[in-house]
Image (tube, one colour):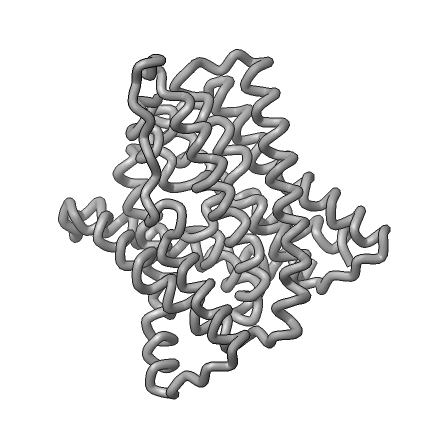
Length: 323
């Protein structure tokens, strides 16, 4: 019961900051460009700095090898989610323009704007290395596999259409580059001057509050009155909040049965991250391929709202499934 109470309090902190962003946007405190600028500040500056400093602070070379072998769990969970999502899209005859969004909603999570602040609120900053295990998997999955389904789902695409190529910033976003650079520094043992380390730490600390304010702003801009719970949305949400966590839980239980010991913190992080909302960038990706942006916005908005109720439930049942 204490775990449930703690998780509810942590989620309430998140809700209050999101609500602050919503109210401030409602009162027109922010200009039209502010959401775009805050998103860019987080993804291109603050998050890479946060990841870089966290890797060097919380990881050692031996722990790095241990966590590297743990990638099989989120990778396996995401693979299962893709397979089931593709089958469901075919069985339900999800129409072109929605299929890519439908598949990505089930398979990929919003690890940056919700997953990271949620993990820190629930488990503290020392859970950052565990978060990175899921983050790396989710990022590669999104920009290597997920984007393929978005592009292939373009309803205007013909056999004569030109293939759109991904640029290097999509395949290797700044946070992932920050992670790889930090790993290089860790392996080689390059010392970091204290003033550089403090600078990166201070800049990285703005990620969580800014990310939560951003969610509140985007929720207001999405117009909550436009939310719809049609069949494709409901099934995608069930996949995001039930199938994805179950896939991870099943793999973790199988790994434990086979004698692959994992830390409790890693297990908790993988399960929580697998239950975070749909990618915030889905409407942008859908628009880039002439997809159903209204549907993409709807699944992002509904999943972001529902996660408030999902996370306490997961935190309550987690002690009964993992040890």
